[in-house]
Length: 166
Image (tube, rainbow, N blue to C red; front, top):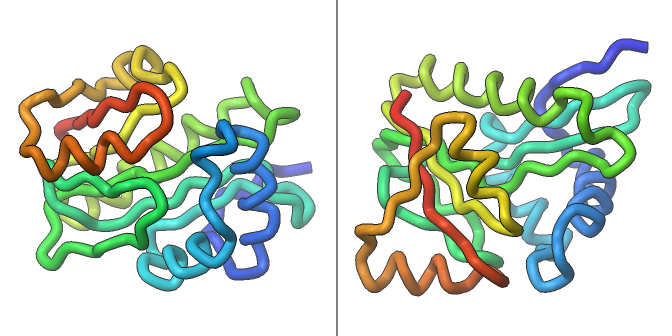
């Protein structure tokens, strides 16, 4: 069967939550109501890969500005005008890792950002994924304001704000 990359829908949120709960440490799993609020806030920047109606992976993002970090557990604050796509949350169901789903979603999201005219993609790397993101062209940003450092500290474990020029 064919895997389809498509816009996330409200009906996908239960599966998204289940994937998130398996992919992240418990301190970083965000409530279903927050996932729903984020989808409502930035529906054009949320995608899933699915096969036969089963969600295999997801990516939740939103328009922002370079240097602005989203704290864990906060709703998305869409910037107007935006110059960056903030990749807040991407995860693949454990039994579907290694199939290129994350890479396909990322490439789709970056193409979306370029079509919008945004110059950057940014994210917070967690759970020892910094080298993964660096391999894709993201560069860690350490010159952050006290406010942004506080938001970065909201994540469990080591967290790194990373940026890619588009």
